[in-house]
Length: 371
Image (cartoon, rainbow, N blue to C red; front, side, top):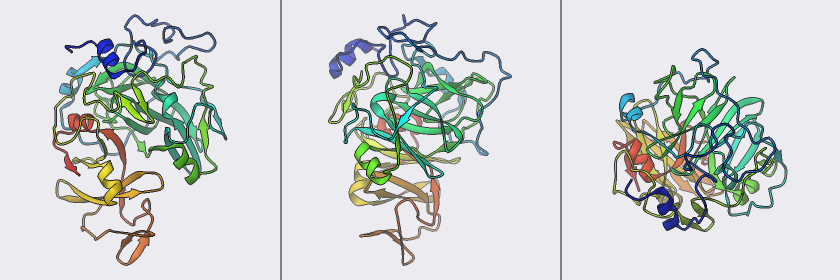
């Protein structure tokens, strides 16, 4: 990279020493504790990963997700994010409350999950310091993950193991490792590229990127992750900028790392709602979707339809192989004369998530882009 990360972040206006948060940091970080420079005392340690290859495994999907590159190419493009393994500490013992932390404003982004009737919100301003929360929702062990460099919040089943931050990146994306087999999992791909589970894909679940006010209005019984993480961090100070109002890295056209492949069809940091299957990928421009409410796009010969959820300012994607007409109405969406909510069309839902365009296009250069 021609321009150092420290200089580039200064250009973005973040004004914070590397190592305080997020995917990038100082390689001189203490590898023994996983603590950022200046962190306080207390339970500021990270679980030790199992080094062997015979540990417990996270549950994997029945079918493998599509990759636009072979595994060897992806592994060759792994780079250091500037921090050691566990230098960004996952939250392994999260605490939740019925009321939001003082640092959470109504328009601040949160990552929401609903599972078997239990709703939880994970504030972006906390996860930017940790990137992974090893949690349990409705009794099921899960990992809620966030990569600030690619703007992606995703959920994974974790079974008997926990996930940690490897300190490595692919296409600017958080590369997780599981503490059972030490396999490496780029978050967006949800597929292992190194270790005994190479080529396997994780089981995923929906994480909704929205704001605290929208989430709390839609799910008034939600609980929210607190700052009682067991780590001393400057929560509320984001190394990369801020989302409310958007500035710094999140709005700049510049990236800290070279994408796997450039694509000028959209601003690099434009947000898309993307979905990928075993056969391909498609991305829908989020702003366009929220304005037009219905968009369609292909994965190979299969049509997919995206619909907007105005309450949460998000969207859902469905396989629509028969190209059935889906139309927006005042009460939701009509299909074959019946009206449905955005999240309950009688079509096969395809898991989707928000991502910055440069990251999506880098991983899926063959993806259709609908705007």
